[in-house]
Image (cartoon, rainbow, N blue to C red):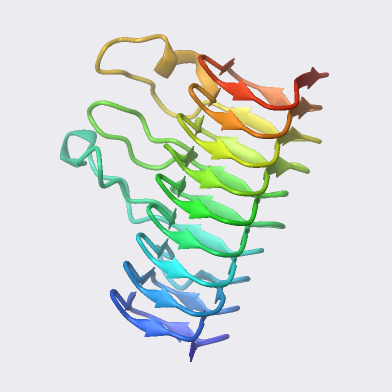
Length: 251
C-alpha cells in the first residue's frame, strides 16, 4: 500500500501503471495525483484532501480499483483552464478524472466536496453507486466543439444508483448521454443546477445552449426522481429508457 496521509506534497504524485494494495492521501495538502492505468487491490482514499497551492486534481483514468473511491470533504482544483482552441476534445483537464476506470465498489463524494474543474466518468464502470450528496462541482475547460461540463459521464455504467442530492450543486451541465444506471437516479432535496460561463456548439444545436441535465439515450433500470431542486436550464430525455417511472416534484 501507499499511504501519505496528512502530508504536504508540493509536486504532483505520478503513479501511472503502478500496482498497489491501496492508495491513500487522506487529509493531505497536495498538488495533484495521476495514477492512470494503475491496479489498486483495495480502496482509493483522498477524503479531506486539500490544495497545497493552485492545483489539487486527481486523475485515475483507466485504473482498475478493487475497492471503493472515497473523496468525501475533499477540495479538488483542476489545472488552469487553457484557451478552448488549445484543448483536444478527448483530453480536457478535470478536477477528478475517472474515465475508463473499472471500480468494483462505489464512489463517495459526499459532504463539503468541491471539484473546481469538473468530474469525468466517461466510459467508467462502477459496480456500486456514485454518491454526491452535498457536493459542489464546477465545470472546467471546454474545447472548440463543446463547453466544459460539471459532470461528463458519456456512456458510463453505474451498477447501483446515482445520487445528486442534499444540497448538491452543479455549475455547468450534467452530461449523461448513453449512460447505464442499474438502479435509480435522484436529483433533488435542495439540489441546484446552474449555467456557468459561455455556451457554444459546433453545430449551433439547441442542446448545448439550454440543457443542464442531459439524459439522452440513457438507460436507467429503476426510477428517475427529481424533486425540490432548482434548474437554470432544461432537462433532455431523448430516447432514454426508464425502468420504473419518472417523477418531477416541485422542480
